[in-house]
Image (spheres, rainbow, N blue to C red):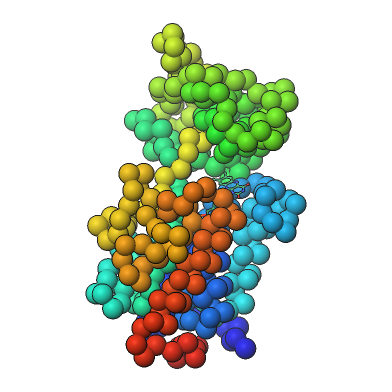
Length: 324
Ligand SMILES: Cc1cc2nc3c(=O)[nH]c(=O)nc-3n(C[C@H](O)[C@H](O)[C@H](O)COP(=O)(O)OP(=O)(O)OC[C@H]3O[C@@H](n4cnc5c(N)ncnc54)[C@H](O)[C@@H]3O)c2cc1C
C-alpha cells in the first residue's frame, strides 16, 4: 500500500509537520501516515530522551529494553511509511491562518497545513560560571551517553530525582567511586532507590549545593556547601554528571502560542493549543507525568486531532496526498 522510498526532502505543502522525533513525534507520524496524510518530521536528532536511557522496564510489551533498541524500533516503524525525517533544528513557526511555515536553523522552510510540536525536554544546567566551557571536558548531562568514558575514575552525580539515581546506579558499575550530591534526600521511585541504596561504592552528601566547578580546561572536582552549616568541602573527581531535572524545548515557540510558567505548551485533552491547527504532545506540554508511554499516547491523540481538524476543512480529502 505504501511506497518504501523515503524522500530526502519535503516537497510542497504537507498536511502535517511534526517537530521532534522522540516517542511523541514518532507515534504521531505513524498515526498520520496510516490516515494517508502527507507528513514530515523535523528533528534535531532521532530518539529524544529515550536514546539517552540505558534500560526501560515500564514500556508495555517489553519487560526490559535498552533505550537504543526502543528508539530503533520506533524509527523502523516510522520508516515503513513515506515520512521524510529531516534532521535539523526548528527555529521559528509562523502562521498565516491557513498555513504554517516552519523555519530551521539549517535554512529550510517547510509549509504545512497543521503542526504537531513534540520537541520534548532538555537537561537543566547548574548555572555556574565555567559550566559551559567544561561540557564534554568531564562535565556531562547524560550518564548513559558519556558514562563509559569514566571507567576506573571517581565521579560525582548531582541531583536526587529518578534520573540522578539511575545515573548513580549506572556509574557505580563503571567508576571506582560515585559521589552523590543532592540538596535533599533522594526522591526517586522506590524500586530504583532500593537498588542504589545497596551499592557499596556510593558516597552520599545530602543537603549540599554545588557552588563551584573546579578545573580550567578539564574537570578536576567540585566545591560543595552544606546548606545548614555553610561549611564547604572540595571533592576531587574526573567526571561530573548533572541530573537536576529537565526544561521544555519551547524557546522557538515564544510569542506564537501560550506557555505556562514552566515554559510548557498549554494543551487541552485533545492536544490542541490556543492556535487552531497547531497541536502539541509529550514532555514539551503541560500534560501530567512525563513518561514514554504517556508521550506516545499523547502523540497518537495529537495526530488524531490533526486529522479531525483537516477533515473539517472545506475541500480537504483524505484520499491520499498528491505527493505520495
Ligand atoms: C535519563 C532518563 C531516563 C528516563 N527513563 C524513563 C523510563 O525508564 N521510562 C519512561 O517511561 N520514561 C523515562 N524517561 C522519560 C521519557 O524518556 C520521556 O518522557 C519521553 O522521551 C518524552 O518523549 P517526547 O517525545 O515528548 O520528548 P523527547 O524524548 O524529549 O523528544 C523530543 C525530540 O524533539 C527534538 N527537538 C527538540 N527541540 C527541537 C527543535 N527546536 N527542532 C527540532 N527538533 C527538536 C529532540 O531532538 C528530540 O528528538 C526518562 C528520561 C530520562 C532523561
